[in-house]
Length: 154
Image 1 (cartoon, rainbow, N blue to C red):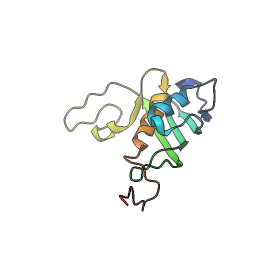
Image 2: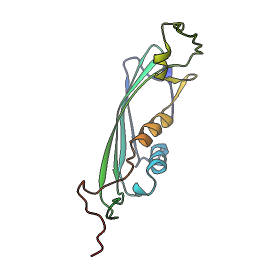
Image 3: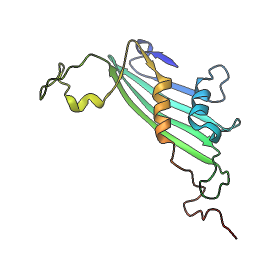
Image 4: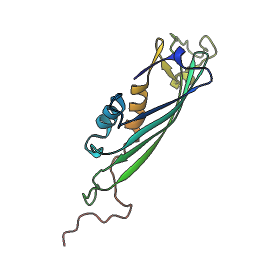
């Protein structure tokens, strides 16, 4: 899903997507790719964002709400798990930046500021941004309960 930067009103806009939306299947495809078998066919996922443009800079904030059915890493039983993933991204247009040792770059940006997110051209790839945030939120293992005893030999 690509958004044209200058199509975003300066007073901002709400952006919603649902895994149930048959006309715009990009969000369902993104969720299925990220969560694989933990996201079942009848599961729900919604994306609620507020996108604000200030001159060339864009701020994206909101959350993704995802209902999963993973297997517990200890007892192997499937259980319902709801994830609420906060999304907060600040984007600026990408400009060539060359840094000299101990010297500030043009525009007052120094080496420590390079971690800021950028977009190239006149479009923002919302799919790539949301995918990256969701992939970083996938737990190493799912537990049905913190004190799950797991499989028992008896």
